[in-house]
Image (cartoon, rainbow, N blue to C red; front, side, top):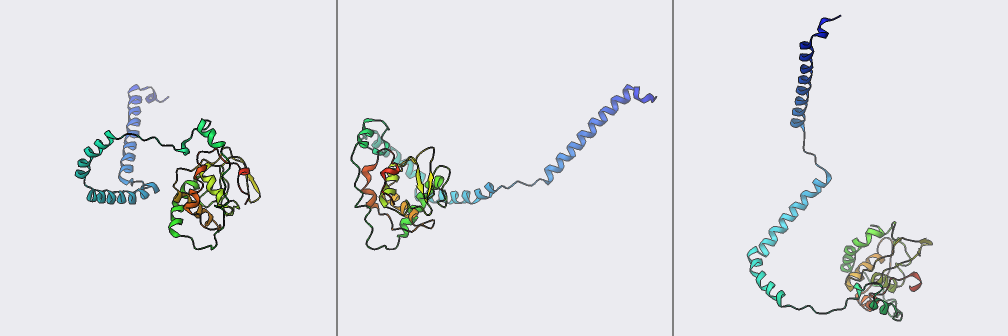
Length: 251
């Protein structure tokens, strides 16, 4: 029998030598990691660099164009005007509460005449690039459901190659102003979604005309532009219940 195995001093010394060796190894490993480690650059970090540069330039331009002293001097005058201003009563049909008397009154109105809106233009002229740019910006909201390329998604039908998109203009305008619920058949496929499309009546006539023109001339679609005055002619639709396919003009 090895007498060292029963020596308490040797066993105690060996234990602490082991602990010390482990701590020294951990310390050396930590030093190596700290010395050789490089900052981790993610894609988000890389994308943030130009954003911060642009923000700095914008802040500098704003400070030059409108100094803080001018803002501080204008605050008392603006505050005084706000203090004496009185709210004016306005009616906004796009904020009608479903089931309210106003909503029921709007729902009971006769169907709108869309014949004048759907009259095809005598000349299919070129699309205004400015209108297309407006539509491209507005479509960023639509793309969340309809897809970046109009391919459709889990909660919205496709826009690419859709007969509804290149069909009567009044359909698109009314859907934009009132929303749509229930099943709809696009290119021979019936789509049923858990929720309907919400109305986008908060957009201006020009914005609605722009986004509909963009959709009608993107993703392989080709159709005449939508004019702001066509949207304005159907503004009485705002506040009414969501449309169903049965209420639309067949493409």
